[in-house]
Length: 486
Ligand SMILES: *Cc1c(COP(=O)(O)O)cnc(C)c1O
Image 1: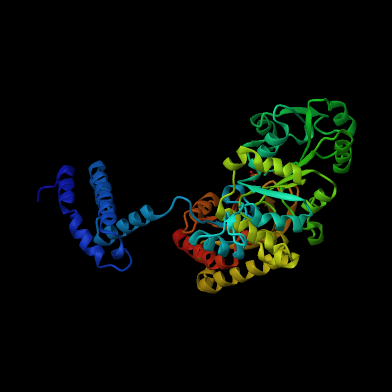
Image 2: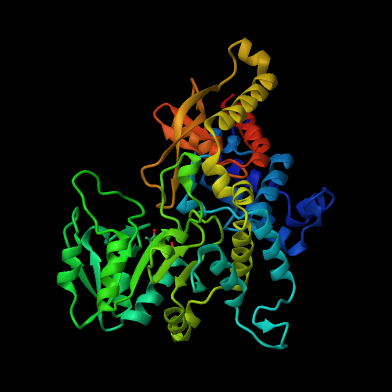
């Protein structure tokens, strides 16, 4: 028998490929995928067939050509995969096993259940967003949270906008456009790569007057910088770093006193909005919004989705007359808060009316205050489950994953509590046959993707940031990865 050439073999394989119609018929009878729209299936089938044709044509040896899987089962699977990829949204959920609670790249705060429910209701139906149900007249979207904010913080008035960067921009634009704002050099922070106080200041048309040095700024430095052009004294919370050692900053009280003497408003950008004394839960003391208001600061700004644990939003609160001016600034319209955000923000704030409820129901606070013992208990339960599922292979030394429980630290993240390392326990995974980078990649390729922390030979999975209902998926992923490693 004459040996066939590569070209002949290629032609034979190309001829053997099923037609779009044949595949479509087969798929239509399958459960799940069969119910998809015809157009989408045809598109996916075409793409899969095109890919196969290309790999057949590109094969440069007979053995490479023969490696191409043309079985019907494989083809159908490929099409299913293609349909799924086409339908999958780009923005999707992941499991955060990094132990960083307010992970900026993974969406910062998780919303409390109450906020989610309200958000769905407000999204699905009409609402009294800007309608006063008592008078039957036009209302203000700000009214829904203003009273709550006043109750929670003691401030005279409040306003919420799109995010805290917008809150700062809007406040500076309203109070200090074309004038001077005095800030300590030690507080000229950059947050998350793109929020820089000096840049925001420039955009607002305010002129920055830096005083003091990186590690020391005294009351006298502020006093000496005050001119007739001064509009505002600004204090910025150094969210994501601390100057340690030989340092000095003018206190909040001193600044307020100086402001009073010169009839200048004092503004504090807190970054994280925090209503609860975290020291009571064994965490580093962070200033609470109430504390800052009580100290007499005229305007306070903070984020909705850092320690506050709500949706991305910015809150401005403080003196009635200043908030009144901000509300009238045309820029406020451009930076206004969306109704879904507002719904989630209001529900989150309501939880704070009872501190115990807040700690239990706001995921950020729940994760922050979880004890290492509680995390360890969950690790142990998960470990026991994998051991039960794989007892035989583990006993015979054929299980390709080693799973340990190690002491580690979680982090608050999001520029909150920068130096605070929260003792935790992690599941530490190691494979005798694969690198930790491979493990990391396999977990990242999971559905849903699971993101952990690489640590030398190990992949760490910190259950502090994994929600309890996600543990099943984590267990399945461990099983899947073990299977892939053989
Ligand atoms: C995070 C932060 C901001 C920006 O807040 P966003 O809600 O991310 O816009 C501004 N100032 C400080 C001090 C911060 O920590």
